[in-house]
Image (cartoon, rainbow, N blue to C red; front, side, top):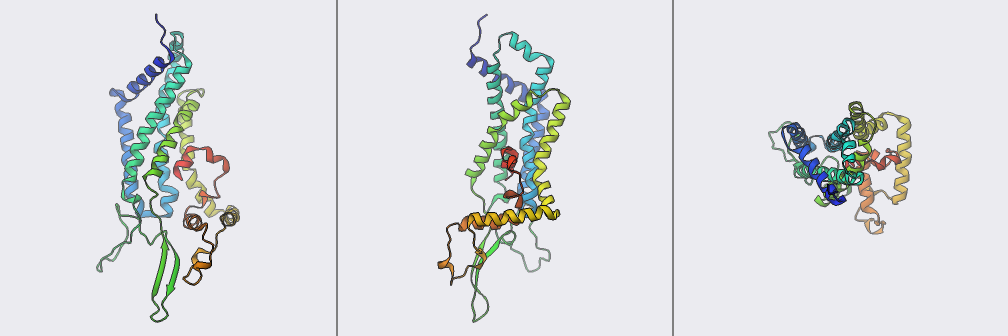
Length: 314
């Protein structure tokens, strides 16, 4: 029999993995699960304004990170089955090169994660939660005027007043300069999509060759859930533990010194020319973010920076 070369084997493995995982009756539950995940992601996007900004920053996107990470379990589950049933060994005896299997699995996991992440995050980005914050307009007869499902984030929440100059004649504000959140553009979201997808092959290969089968999958699922939930737990611990809060305060002061931040709230037409505004944008971003999501800068242990879930969440 003619032995297939490495490229042909790799291409055949990729086609086989796509056919087995995403076609046929057995794939219907998988399609339903990930359609629901995408739908929930869209619902979260439209709900952002209702809990903006603190709850959104620290808790809402935990679910989205888990939705993205769960794809690794779906990809790796057949590998566990093939390995424990002896199918991988059988294919090796028939001439399959292990390098072809590794490359094929890596390419397949990257493509699947890329397509799924692109669909989920792109649809989320299209929702009202990722639009520039706007002022909430209320009618005179509206007693409870709150942001609702589908509204844009309220500019009055999560913003800071940078400069206010009062007119001494009438006591009203003559000059006001406020800073508030705005989406960074789809390019940044696309960067998250690509970079998170690049982590999929490593995650799949590292999980796929753990000993065990069903119990190993259950444990891996719980580990992924714990990693995705860690930002929320970190935020709660820093808000409730005085010792940790003292450490955060110390770290915050170090950040301010590193950025050379001055009191950006003290700007006025009289002193704006004399201030060093070299790091104004960085300091402004720190001021806006640190109050609502402190662990971004200081609460997260350094080692967690290697986890793609933390990068996607941030």
